[in-house]
Image (cartoon, rainbow over all chains, first blue to last red; front, side, top):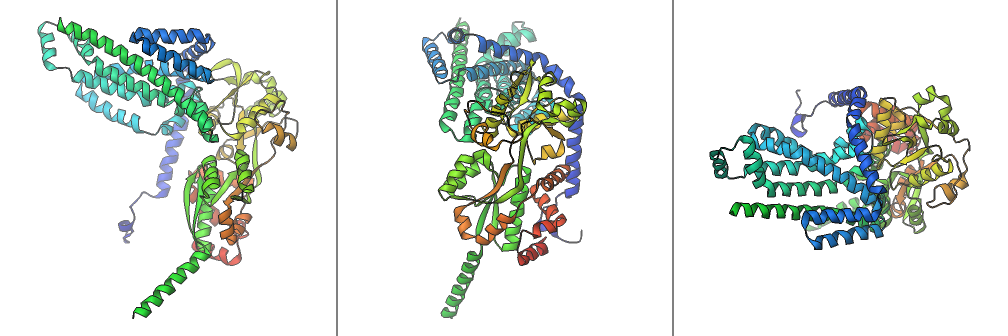
Amino acid sequence: MSDTSWLSEFPAMERADLRAIRKTLDGLYRDFSREYGEVIESIFDPLLSFLVWFEKLLLSTPWFIVLACCCGLVYAASRSWKLVVGCAVSLLLIGYFGMWDDTMRTLSIITVCTMLAIVLGIPIGIAMARSDRVQSVVTPMLDIMQTMPAFVYLIPVVMLLGIGKIPGLIAVIIYAIPPVIRLTNLGIRLVDTEVLEAATAFGASKKQRLFGVQLPLAMPTIMAGINQTIMMALSMVVIASMIGVKGLGQPVLKSITNQYFTLGLLNGFAIVALAILFDRASQAYAKRTQAHLGDLKHD
Amino acid sequence: MKLKLATLLIAGLATTQASADECGNITIAEMNWNSASLMANLDQFILNEGYGCSAELIPGDTMPTGASMIEKAQPDIAPEMWTNALKESLDKGVADKRLRYAGKALVDGGEEGFWVPSYMVEQYPELATIEGLKKHAKLFPHPEDSSTSAFYNCPAGWNCQISAGNLFKALNLADAGFTIVDPGSSAGLSGSIAKAYEREEAWFGYYWAPTAILGKYEMVKVDFGTGVDKDQYLNCVSKEGCESPEATMYPPSPVSTVVTEAFANREPALLDYLNNRGFTNTQMNELLAWMEDNQATGEDAMFYFLETYPETWKQWLPKEVADKVASAI
């Protein structure tokens, strides 16, 4: 290397080497998916049949029953008639504009995604809160999950599992799970050490401290995390539909490629309406449980 | 002294003026698939080196680029446009004197159809025709509902979604137990082919050539046994809401280079080149397979093409321009 070209140009790797690396890694991944694809696919089979069953249930149930159930759930969570009326009106409007079936499909996959995200996320958050080492490993992973462009992992997942609900579900969960993990961790870590000391002084075991003190006190923060998770899951609907998940995302894609802006906007608003419903209901639920906790504290 | 400076300045201005008259700034849409990216890079290189332009690539895709060319006259050139995809707006743009079709980017035209992997046809030769395929519908289970069979359709919102949907109806595929799977995007569709092919699974659906996927994975085009009925295709199969479509094979899909009217008027010499520039499908498939094998970018492939096939591209250019390009490689 007698010339000084490295001064003006970045001393990059030889093109051929880079190509060799890319080809080898791609080949390895291809071999992996050929070898283990079917096994991995069969692991997800129960989940897939549940997703299909749940979607069919929502689609085949008469609309007014679904509507009544939704309103009932909203009332049970929030005890607010205003919210119930809002829920009924927005769902009726969605149906009136011909988006009922797509909304039901989106509702089913988002519900399952959020449940899974919560079930997986809260234990991870608890583990992070209990150990600094776990936190230092998980935090960068969460950063990657939140910033890595979805298409980078979407198509490899398609090669492994095919198009449809499961890869869509994985993509949505990867993107939407970080807030609930982060905020569970934060909420538990923010619990006053004095409160914990008091609990220990009363002879509470580790388990009792977690379920009786830390989690209840962290609940408002955890609920904020769950809210964010729901919102992000809904915002992924369009990305998920790019790998064949049926629902509100598909008409959005379709209308955008054809520049039918109104159709796009209508479906976009349906997604927003779902998000607001989920958010307000869970928010109100959190507030109620919090108020109940507050009463206890004053006793 | 001042006078001298002024004359220098004027002379300088005059020369820049002259070169601007010759060829100015040009924008070329680089679409996000391999063959179009190769053509965009090739056009840029030839315009810059052969004609002394300063051509710039801007990323694009069929729909947004088409809309921008019609409404804003930017970019100047779309090297590879599958015109059937937005036929109405393009034709309107041409009628309104905003666009002009230059030459055919793919001389043979694009090839569309319903395909099955070749390893399946080896096993069941009758899958090469639609009748045999309908008999064997059970071979193609739907991923989410094994009681039906899957037909992978063209991505949502593309024009081929309409034509493939109409053909699906015309061929009575639903009666044979098939349901349409919407892959959502072209990446999803090609991903589903790649997945099936790597594991030798069943796959049946719409695709088009020349593409890297069909260059890499050998597929057999299913014969509908109808031949090509161009009128039927144009007036019914490709139209949304056609009541009773009849089966027909796809006619070759025109793939043109589209330029803005302003560009065509400004740069007649360049328009000549674009009118001449066109690839045959065999050539393009070979180039695409090379790109895929080497994970090459459009730029790499452009150099490979210029170096390997001088007899092809020299035909497209006047002698002196071709010499300039050859010396620049």
